[in-house]
Amino acid sequence: MNISNKDSTSCLCNDAVFKSIFELNFKLIRNYLIYKYKDIDRAEDVAQNAFVILWENCKVLKPEQAKSFLFTTATRLSLNQIKHEKVVSDFELKSNKSELNPESPEFLLEENELRKQLETAINQLPEKQREVFLMNRFDNQSYTEIASLLGLSVKAVEKRMHLALVTLRKVMKNI
Amino acid sequence: MKNTNDTFLSDWLADKISDNQLKQLVSNEDFLAYQKLKNALGNYTISDADLEQNYAKIQKKIEAKNSTTQPKVFHLWKYVVVAASLLLFFGLYQVFYFSNNVSTNYGLTEIVTLKDNSRVTLNSKSKLSYPNFFKWNRTLKLDGEAFFEVQKGSKFTVETSLGKVTVLGTKFNVTSFNDYFEVVCYEGKVKVENNTKTVILTRGESVRVYEKTFENWAQNNAEKPQWISGESSFKNVPIKYVLNKFEMQFNTKVKYPENISKIKFTGSFTNKNIETALKTICVPLNLNYKINEENIILTE
Image (cartoon, rainbow over all chains, first blue to last red):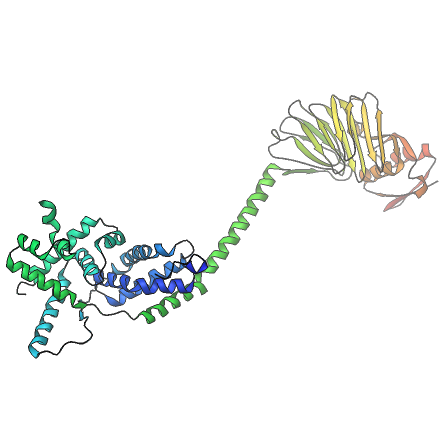
């Protein structure tokens, strides 16, 4: 973090500080909302609104409080906004390798098949397992971090991780 | 162990237990499946967010909020608070201080009985104000002349623009017209204060302040001022103030030569008949009078 200066530049109301908080956290919050509700447009809208509320409270919050404030706010907002309309689009994955190695057509085919299976399996995970599991697997957040952001015990996070993997294994029997 | 049974896969995902340890816990087939899943998951992620676009949208939302609701709400709230506190302050002032007003017109007197059974007799063209909670705060404001019969109790204060009279329980008369201030004590003791002096009057004593004169004298043993029974009486008062009182009583204007204004007058006039009253003033001073429609002219 480049926010450790003690002068006015360490205030959240400072544009540069706010922007750096945005760059550090926007993706995490938006992804969390996608894992939770499987709806990219809504997730981005809610995440934006959480940042607007963060800005409105920039005088009373310290930069180091921003992340957990954003998660709490986003969760609360999404309860209001997403709940009443349970239209859920399906989950889509993309490879995180910059370009696929065109090793062989069979490989590509297999790759494609695997991705589809994973998408289906993740789609079927219960919401509570999916949000925790993907926050850890895709965004590399530790169990402790996830627990504090979502207001859970570390034990609960560990249980959800375990159950999620068991469920995925069951869904993808022929892996 | 139940503990590890619950979460061994999460421990394995977090590298807290090794592949070999996991192999002890699950079948070989399961182990291979888990390993494949772990590796596969590592190859995927979800679509990336367009950070620039999202940041621009946040800025827009903030701007929209700033330009519409927020400042207006805040300002209105501020004004309402200021208005409410002013209103409250004014209201309390009204309730606790001088919210009762009694005033008399030319030639009339009025008797006011206060909550503590004290009586105030108000002479003509005078004004009296006193608070609602009079029992706890016996402070009155007077402009003009009044006779007070005060019941015993807490401190009783009459404030005028020229001085202050404080008593406990007594009868006294206060006159405060323009620059003329007079207090006569009929019973008990009263304390009279103005900017420069403080005197204590006992029964029959009077004090008078006008211009730069401060007079203190013992009066007769009357029970109450004579104006109560319809007469205005004076002892050694400059004619200027006597005529002032006369104007007050009969709602008229009196014109007189400047050089007689300082002549002292002792006596009284009736408040019932203008002609008789005029005679009682003019005859002892050797003055002539002429009654016109809108004024009275005195000549030597």
